[in-house]
Length: 83
Image (tube, rainbow, N blue to C red; front, side, top):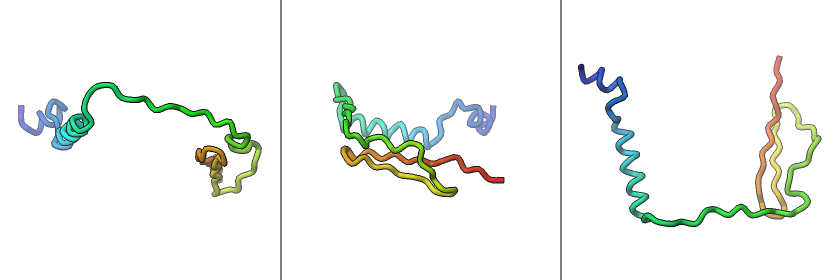
């Protein structure tokens, strides 16, 4: 089997794959193994947390809603219908 055929068969890791694996190992070694804290999902009880419903968004525009209580950002992009 030629080197090109071996490379194209997927049996040989590319330089990028090897480099990414090495970078992930560096991060793992820097942070160390063991237990870690999971991100906690906090509940926002602000009445305006969710974006408004039944609003008209003009063609070619989007709407960004920011919760005044927690700062959560939601981007609404309507379907763009063109003929």
